Image 1 (cartoon, rainbow, N blue to C red):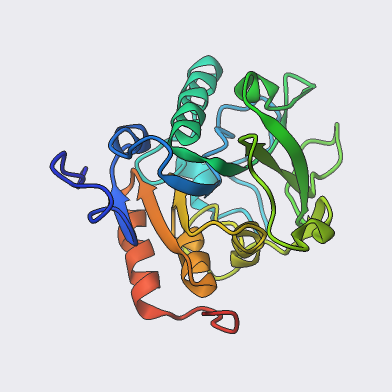
Image 2 (spheres, one colour):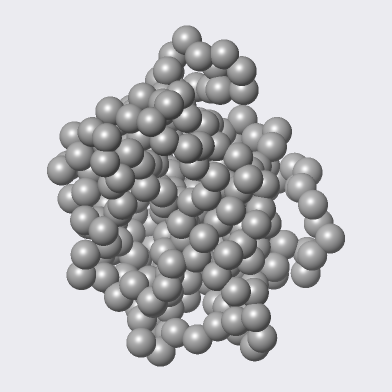
Length: 257
């Protein structure tokens, strides 16, 4: 089910909305240089893996995780690798197009072991203005393969246009951020609100886009920081999840503007 109507008008039908549709199709309706910041975490395509990181009949914390068994709602997370790289390259190209000259992308991703060898995401990021890699130390992970240690971090790639600058004193945070994984979230792969808040509050951006908004974490962080958001997701289930979460305001409001 795709809700997005081609007759929607930017910005009135986009700002502070959760839009259900293919992110490439939706972003093509956003004018050039109209978004201040992108904060997002795409599907990692981890079910297309030879590293045995996912095992359907495992015990413990991950045994009933929906993403291990079925992928995401409306996305299997099991694309041929070349197709996945092309998709993400196209998505990043659209993100960069809609950014203002002072804009940047916080792109949360992770590497994996594939065929016994470490595979980073350089094939996706090739050609983009990567300014910095921030380590998100999450203190936990999963690994059913005795050939390598449990991974406990992910990477936030800061892809920035030349005029991008951090907010005053934000550079003092450093490039290793420690946040525990999100808890009590029905989405199969959410990132914590604190991570999204750090990205947003480290900039002066007023309009933030998340083309893989999932359960709405980036949108919630925007509301708490007094910023505007545009959230996109292909899954109508996650879109409704995000809308309900925003409407309920059952989240930490200590920093809410």
